[in-house]
Amino acid sequence: MSVPFLDLRAMNDEVRPRLDELWNQIVGTSAFVGGPHVEEFEARWARFCEVRHAVGVANGTDAIQLTLRALGIGPGDEVIVPTNTFIATVSSVANAGAKPVFVDVDPATLLMTASHVAAAITPQTAAVIPVHLYGQAVDMTAIMAVARRAGIAVVEDAAQAHGAKWDGRRVGSLGHVACFSFYPGKNLGALGDAGAVVTNDDTLAERVRQLSNHGRGAGHYAHDVVGFNSRLDGLQAAFLSAKLHRLDAWNEARRVAAARYDELLAPFVELTDQRTEAESVYHLYVVRADDRDSLKRSLEDDGISVGLHYPVPCHLQPPFRDDMRPPLPVAEDAARRQLSLPMFPHMTETQVERTAGSVRQHVRIRHEEAIA
Image (cartoon, rainbow, N blue to C red; front, side):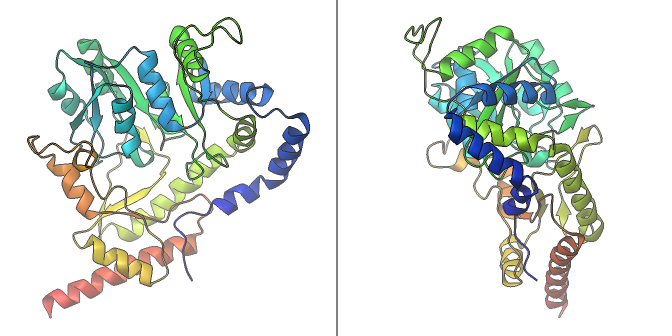
């Protein structure tokens, strides 16, 4: 039996009748850009995230870049980012004209910590972007304390953490502003690209909305600032609303699968630690192994699809590499050793056990070879 890394069809099939109905409705009304479906999703997503405002945008990358620009961050400013993240976190900083300042991550959770942030702050620091990676929230209590003392903005990158919590509060409500991606493979995924910015700051929300819509002011042809074309499609907004009421159940299914993985794998590979204050939504299930590449080949030969998140830390990517920068050893070691196992809400216990069994068999064989 093969095991896919992700099963998008199962998620979409669960709400397929409603998706078909919405498709026909939107084609019939031509409500393709903006309109009631976008307004409905923005309101529902704001409530879900426990904030006052949600602004739909074209994708998660734009969400970060527009947020930074709305905050007035640009040339001459520094933004602290973890190097263990998808490149969009960092490229958004650069595209806003600011300088990304890379920090290492905690060896147990592979997440940014407050001590990393505190050590990286300079007079030029304007913001920090904690990334809730793999579905687990960063320690936002500590991050916010550091940020308050330094007087800098906190922009949550929650692209992998829809519905995750820190100390009982949803991500998105913990910093000054938060950015989401609804790329199809996310916990809440559109049927194409989509994103959102959420915040309790009335002025910031309006600024993001204006920047995302050609800088429009009071009228259709009144452009108060230089803006962008980064609007959420009505079709994607409608699809997201149709899926949103399933999100909590889907996240719980991910937690059940992760708990079973934990039981079966703990003695065989290094697991990613989960903080007791965090409620993860397990966008990814990441393990570490010294022979990662060999393990990956073994699983793939056994019909099990896996992923690498991420094989090259951002500070070593060509656009950002600086040979004078000190190494970031935890992230660099993780990049060599981490492997993402199949994880999706419709994953069966049989699929979890099949995957874990393949991992265990590989480890046993390698152990026997080592002592032979």
